[in-house]
Length: 118
Image (cartoon, rainbow, N blue to C red; front, top):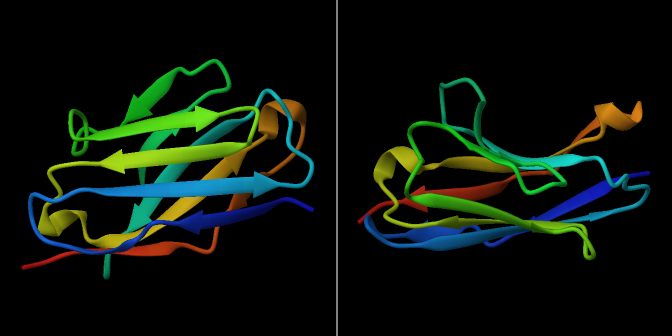
């Protein structure tokens, strides 16, 4: 049983910063990809950032240059440093663990709310 526990969401003013963290536990394979998705009210869930076990990263165009994803393979954690936050970044952010390369599944966290407002 794989569990993902997110932390770090909250309310921040425009231009501010937040750091999200996600800790994975259970049967974790070394060849996994971890990442973050988000879903704003009335919108589809979208990919924000992803990072492979070899530290190859990918970002949505809307966050490139503002967000930074990192992971600690020894601790099975992934972080998302979010700078220069804007109201359009307001959403529920979900941690994701993709283990399909290991013939396993994709796992999702419960989500953490990020609200950017003055």
